[in-house]
Length: 215
Image 1 (tube, rainbow, N blue to C red):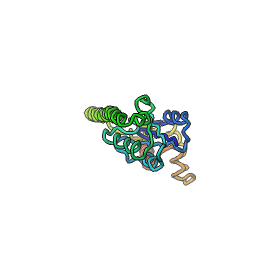
Image 2: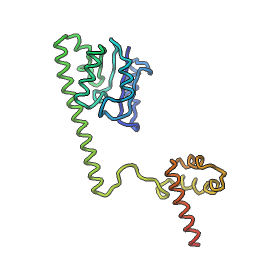
Image 3: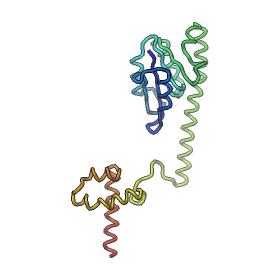
Image 4: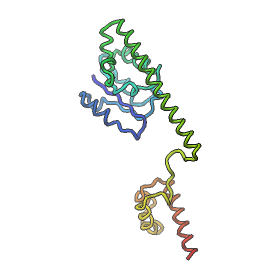
């Protein structure tokens, strides 16, 4: 049986490019396993589910070695478990000329030695890249903090919501106050989450009070 394993680093990243590759290889959609999380370890739900499905003779496709992981020891351990204990095979599409475990198996003990050497080299490269990414992120945060920039997503408030949202707020505020619409309905109209919704409403009410006092 053919399987495909896909990993992207976060929910914001798109896995469609990898999915299309797997489908083009003739892999059934139900046998494509997707994780949306970092490569810090192998405790990923879809990856662990895939491993429970693997049987002797199965073929697992991965787009690139760093999609499997970036941990040097972990990559080697997982690769050997799948190819030598579960007796399945792995093909890394990005380097399939080198990383097709079927080729190494056909070469006997010499193939195992060559496979170990190639795997160690590329696993090391993958781990070093992960360390570089973490270092760049840390340096970027340090620079931003030194420059007084706020990290994370910008906080929404009455001044930063869109003009369309401000219009919806003005047009429907009285409807909400008179219970013509519920808070949940008002939130949906504004496309805001609960905490942000009530924060902005409070700001809006304060501006209204200020306007009345000024008049």
